[in-house]
Amino acid sequence: MDEQGASSKTQMEEKGLWNAGRGTGHWEEYRNIVRACREATRKAKAHLELNLAMDVKDNKKGFFK
Image 1 (cartoon, one colour):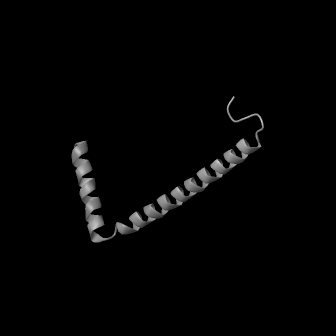
Image 2 (cartoon, one colour):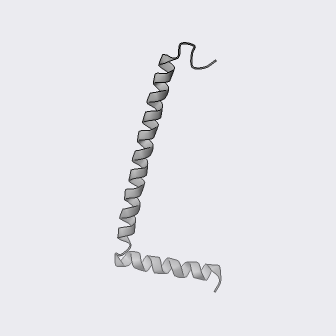
Image 3 (cartoon, one colour):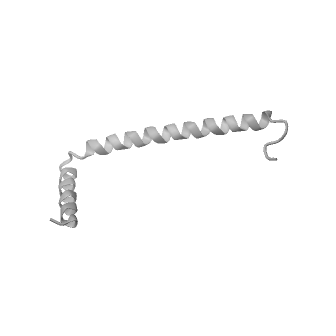
């Protein structure tokens, strides 16, 4: 079977699982992982900006040369 045929068969199987309601657990798991990653990224950015602002404030010679 060619690649396109195998791909469409896989897609049909996934769609069947999704329609049966058995695919929703994976979607919720994915959403939880994405939410956790976004939260971690948000906290890391805020921490980085805070440290940068404190370093600039303490630097007597200036930020840019």
